[in-house]
Image (cartoon, rainbow, N blue to C red; front, side, top):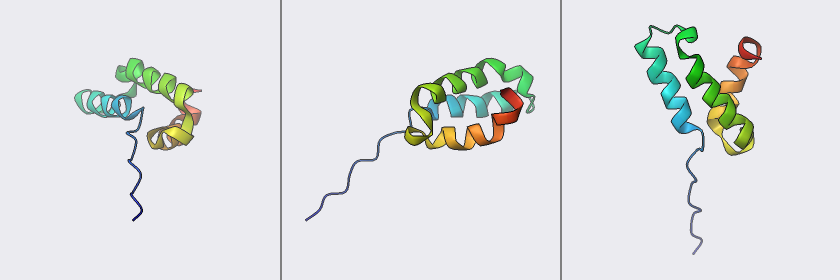
Length: 67
């Protein structure tokens, strides 16, 4: 019998959730959430899209806005 592999948690999920909380609390004004967005970039730089599904979507939407 083949055992399914354990799914590893996304290493940048915490930062992605913090961005959502911040945006909701600040009426979706990205400038108000610059610090948490910067933390997400740091996490994505560390782990990359291959280890974080959150980063693949985040980097697609923020490529031109934040680079």
